[in-house]
View 1 (cartoon, rainbow, N blue to C red):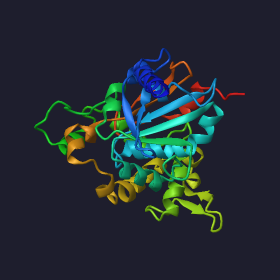
View 2: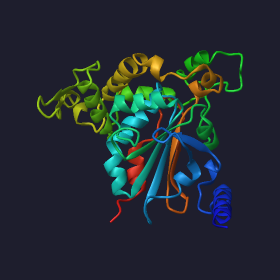
View 3: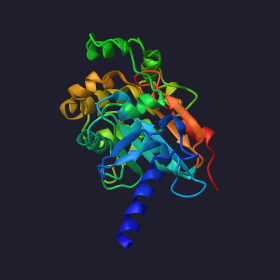
Length: 307
């Protein structure tokens, strides 16, 4: 009798898990990604709608393939902004990458992002090799996504000039000209990580020999524009680091496989969402181009610090 009751309870529990939650984030209903730590499927709608504690919030970043500029920058921004996000009650954070588990582990190691799959607990690292979650969320799929005859690399080349990704050129050019209004302090942090790991260019920052902390940012010494919140060439220098010593140098480990290429992962963009405990979106973003990822300063402005 006890055994029969146990079986009935397990079946009932499994059935309840298939039912939609009233407070689940609807765009990702029924969509899963695989946890890098446990190798188990995670229901993303439930993940982003069930905070760690009452009154807190969840954040889900739907990244791109591991060698992509957007995925790299999302990971770098997460690393820097984790304390600020936590101050706003965003205590449950997930990062989904369109790659296999080894590639995801490699990327977070390259950018020193603490996650549950390594020695940190701040970020839940997940993979979705075919990019299903991003498409369900509504991210951009790039140039000519339905053209199965054209090489995905040709499509990607077209996107560099704005085809199917209108914000690419403004985002890239912005890395060169800077911004006198809105700061991007994560850039210096990411460059410092790169210099500590021996990446080139390695002359932008002077690091303390003992603590490895930034002593001088040479971009602040530029005449006139050195006082800007985001100095000219600063972000472009970081992106050069990322391209040479993360993306190209580790291409074999980070690149999508043939099946993922056929699924359109190479040209798929990313996005992110922050939800409250009722599954209501407080902030949503869908990348409009290569390098045109969410500005985390906008998230900080929109979501106040919790008391």
